[in-house]
Image (cartoon, rainbow, N blue to C red; front, side, top):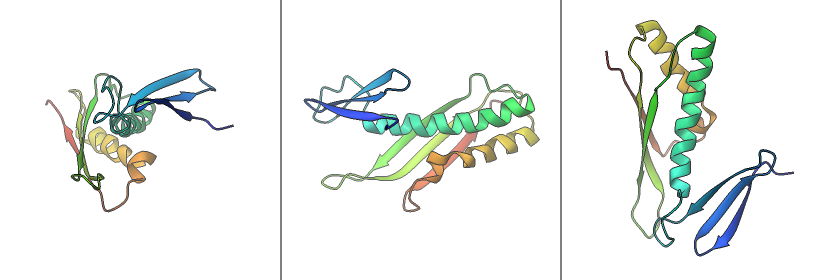
Length: 134
């Protein structure tokens, strides 16, 4: 049984359902749909950000580091029509205050363990910047 099934509903709208979890997310096309739901690109941004946060979270849990409030902003940079594709992805990780240099290094390295981050083709310029308030 597939872990996720995505169904075309009509009018540039789809629903992805994880039947084992009883959860779903609606999507539509930001160009030709209604633009009311998350787009596939939005979900790609969220997947990358969530994966990096969870990778850092595993290290934080192990080492007793509080990551509460850490946020990731992701920007997808695309090529113009007619062949739309992503050529660059820029992520900014906004870290909380009070993380020492040794833990910063561990947490930053942990983002490299994110399987989604590692899955992008090398032709995509993927940059991750970390911002610390202190």
